[in-house]
Amino acid sequence: MTIRAVAVGIGHYLPERVVPNSEFEATLDTSDEWIRTRSGIERRHFAADGETTSDLATYAARAALADAGLDINDIDTIIVATSTPDLTFPSVATMVQHKLGMQGGFGFDVQAVCAGFIYALTNANALIISGQVNRVLVIGAETFSRIMDWTDRSTCVLFGDGAGALILEAQTGKGTPQDRGILAVDLNSDGKYRDMLYVDGGVSTTGTSGKLRMMGNQLFRHAIEKLVATAETALAKAGLTDDDVDWIVPHQANIRIIKGTAKKMNVSMDHVIVTVQDHGNTSAASIPLALSIAVERGQIKRGELLVTEAIGGGLAWGAVVIRW
Ligand code: UT7
Image 1 (cartoon, rainbow, N blue to C red):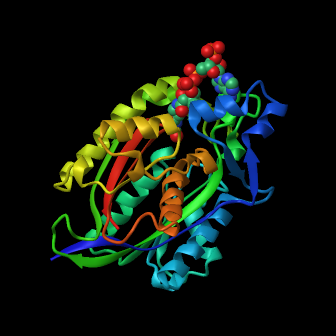
Image 2: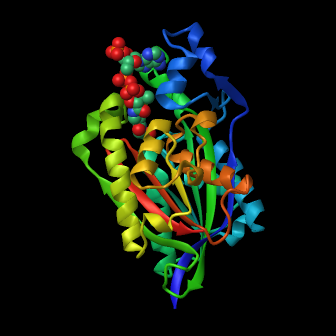
């Protein structure tokens, strides 16, 4: 008998305002054509004034609870992956806990930038399989529009806001790769690459929240190789290979990275979830958003094998293998 963390509900929220690439042409030396061909992005959503990360997270959480047919008090733990919290503290998770009226339990945030949802899933899985909790609400939520330098065309056209939420529940499996739930995880980070993607402000340095800085083309060179390695390591830990994959659910940063990773894994693009055109890069929210939309569209079905992978600031990267 093996305890598995099994997905029982999923949901997402996207802010109302949709910003097409063409909107940047008025203020920057850029074009819809450049953004589309270099990144695959066509539009993104931006949060309204006063709309915070915990608001987005709360809406996504409500959708996931409704999908699972659960009440917030059926949940033991909330984990929020974010790099754009409402405040330096308290955690977004405790704000969501309060907004949803959760009595008891506990919540905390995980910060691993674009790999945040992978790190959060790993934490949730550890809490469940060690028998400490039964149900975890795992949320990826970001308002990256708040940390853009609107004069920097190399970054501000790439990111967007949104949130996705997944509920994991302890269920009994047989201990085989045929079990539903999280089958394996793989996490990595390497702080020597700090300058490739960072925010130039913070509590103990400038006292401001800062703006995002990225050496996109240098990061691009690391991305495919590291994503393939972590995805294949996670699959091997689960006793599986690339051939077993029904769906890659990648972090949605750049269509060229998504295609390059799938090609190296010999997975056809018909088996890759792609939402980057509609959302841009929503950092820790990108994977749960893509998952939720794919389930809603009827692409991902119960029992199918997913490998989800991400890389971002740190650098931090990783993958999770999950049978839906
Ligand atoms: O989610 C976290 C992880 N992040 C990533 O994985 C991002 C990885 N990197 C990327 O996705 C790509 O590197 C970018 C989309 C950021 C950039 O694409 P690229 O093909 O690597 O372009 P580049 O940075 O090498 O820039 C090519 C040219 C430069 O001009 P010159 O030097 O060739 O004259 C840039 O100045 O494109 C220029 N450029 C732009 N031109 C029009 C940069 N941004 C823009 C822009 N519009 N918005």
